[in-house]
View 1 (cartoon, rainbow, N blue to C red):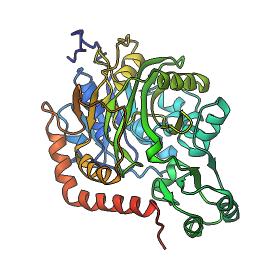
View 2 (view 1 turned 180 degrees about the vertical axis):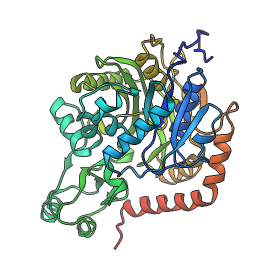
View 3 (view 1 turned 180 degrees about the horizontal axis):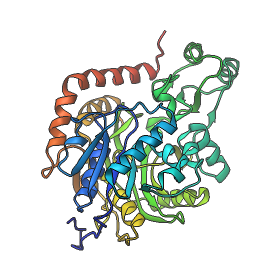
View 4 (view 1 turned 120 degrees about the vertical axis):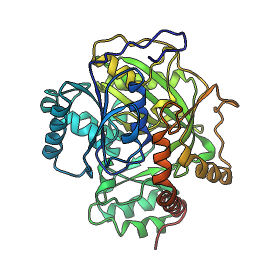
Length: 421
């Protein structure tokens, strides 16, 4: 049984399983492996939806069963709900749902009544997760509740892009307006930095009659710091576990998934997040990306993921609680032990941190709040008590992964001051 820093065991309800829900084809997902290990180490029976039987998650020693169910995330919701219910019947008892992507989080929220017959999950306004996952929806909520966010525009036509280009201060950032577009026909590949008016108009010609993009002000790296907040909020939107940290490196550089991060205490940021969650009435696990703009001294909310973040295992408190454990304990009626976060703890994603390190050295970017020495390190893949996910990741990553890393780097490089002709 897992224990916190002070030796008290975490008392989870072992009669209630957990089910990791993934919609889409991304087998090398360390967040799902982290959730399986986190609850599995407490003796909670763990199940997961996987692309095949040989993903890292599928071979974890803490996984009782993998349900092989390849999806794209673009299927009809009714079909996906029926598939989840079918898996629930096979598990045979109520299970806590742990979504790892926006598609899964939105599906659960919008079909709560059907899924509640088989599963446990935080109950929310059914429309809220979709709105939070949308760049436009999130920006509107930030404006409504006084939360700082980058200045943004949502052009509805090419003519509006032209008018924006006339008054914009370059560089600007382009992102897909809706999170789900990345799996359909995305207008841009992730976060794209555009250097000038000509580059924007050239790119916009391929966006069609109704551009599905958000155009945002660019926050200069030399004047900004990347912060993250992970937390779990109960049915009253009260924080039961709250954590803050700094992102040291990401892949693709400065715009992608966390590759290296540290736990850093930031009471001001925790208060901003808690007040916003209370105002919008959200319940469940959150993963927030914010950028501190040193030019005006404000934390600007960039992304709101209404689900577990891939790097959630960075954060744990003195009682041994992370956000996934907090959710399972709360939904099963158990107390959630309180404790200070383990400041100085470091998280490394082995397969993407090395290329990220090389890229960041060339850029000269540093994170002022990263401690000189870590108080402890959590690796995303390698674990002495569960080695097979790491070995499986290596086997699947080495050849196709190298090609994929090059593609991500190339895309990011083209987006930073260059646009495809």
